[in-house]
Length: 323
Image (cartoon, rainbow, N blue to C red; front, side, top):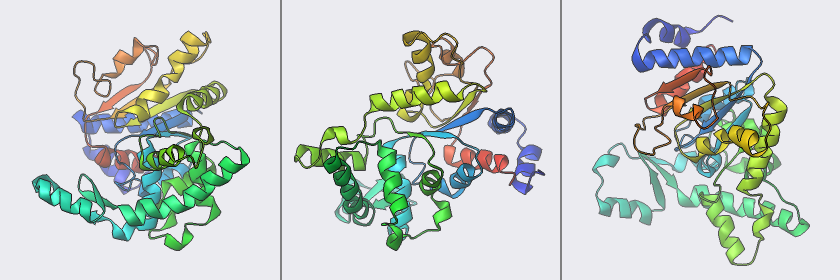
């Protein structure tokens, strides 16, 4: 397919330094898919609140990503944006806010993420009453599901339709639910919905075991990796943190702990990050460090794009979608 104007612009003008790394990474990603490999995309930070879904949902629909690892925040915040978009507030001068102004936002029920405030009542509480019913139903039946599976159930049930405030095609979680895409959500407890679930457990209304654990997510990922890596699985990391740290470890775990010495390394690696290399900073570690941990091979295509993921990721996705 002929590349569109955005892709042509990138190829013509992005020639050196981080812009060249962007092009190289995009072309290598494309080659992975052409060669029959699958691709994991990991979402850290607040990429859902940054409305990455506007283009990431199309990546899912066009089968440019086969498995996702994301934080609990990204899992829920895409749905929050779906049901409460008009209630979000942007604060362009966020760097100048005083502690009192920050407190005033809290008093108004606005939780700030950089320049964007999430409305607590319309976003968190609107989801809470619906997800609680789904949790409770599973709990009563003695059924257990992963955090993303509960979210899929809520989305596909239609109970949120009355609240939709954006075009459904711009929700990456809805696209993933329709495709029943595998999602890994390490550290889900560290999210608003995770905190809410914990509160019900503390109150004795739900059992902790109703939501499957992080250890079970690792076992789930290990099973996926062994069944799908014959042609390679690439690793496209947006940001740092647990969304990337957790799933990349599946390869050395399978090799070292399961003694599966024929397990292939990740077949591609790219990270978009503004984290600098420092003492013990894994998010800022160069890809070659991952060779020493048995995650990447000597010949694995490796890319680091040191820039803002909200700028870089949409451009790479546009290239992959021939825009």
